[in-house]
Length: 292
Image (tube, rainbow, N blue to C red; front, side, top):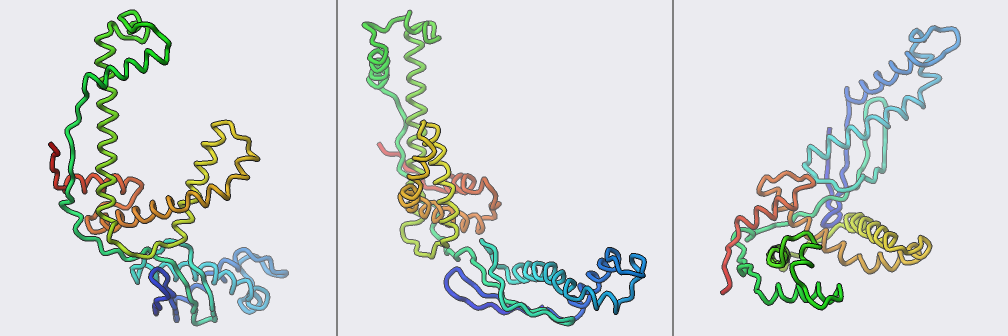
C-alpha cells in the first residue's frame, strides 16, 4: 500500500492511497465466492454456477461490494500507518477500482499538534480553609429569617434532626467548610487551566466545537424543560442558545485538547476520565504556596 499525505491547513490532511496486487485480487475472489454461494442462477445449484456466468450477471454488484469492504479497510490501515489522530469521518473522493488496483483520496480532520510545556510546577497560591463563628451566625440568621422565627433554640434544632442547637451549629460549620473547600479547589483548577492555556495559539477544529455545542444546547433545553418552559418556546430559543453558548463550547474544546496533549506526553489513558486524571497529575506536580 502506498500513501501520500498533503497538508491542507493546521488540522486538515489529504491522504492519497493506492493498493495493488493480491490485496485487490483476493478481495474480488472473496466477494465472488460469497456470490457463488448465495446467487440463484437458473440451471445451476447454489455454489456451482461457472465463474463466467457469475461475471456476466454480477460483475457490477461485485465491484460495489469490493469498494464497500476494501475502501474502509484500506483507509483504516493508512491512518494507522501514518499515525494520524483523526477526529471526524473522512471525505472520500477520486475512487478508482479495477481487478488489480484500488486508489482514492481521503480528506480528514485531525487533532491539532500542541506543544505543551512548563506544565509541571505550576505555582498555586492557596489559603487554608477556616470557618468563623460569624459565618455560622449568618447561616443561622438566614435560617431564622427564611422560617420567620423569633428565636432559634434546641427545639428548632431537634425539628431539623439535631439533638441541640450546638450540634446544628457544628453541622452548619461543616457545611460551610465543605462549600469553601470546593470553591477553593475550583478556583485552583481554574488558575491551572489559565496558566496552561494563556500563551497557546492553535487551531481549534470546528467539528469538535460543533459537537460540544450540540451537547451544551441539548442540556440547556433539558434544563429549561425541567423549569416548566413549553417545548415550543424552547425551540424558539434554540438559535439564541447556540449563539450564546458557542464561546463556552470553544473554550471547553480548547481546554480538552491541551489536557489531551499532556495526557499523551505522560501516558495517561485517553478515556472519559482523562481530564480528571490529568488535573490530578497537575495538582500533584504543582508548586503549592500558602497565602498568609
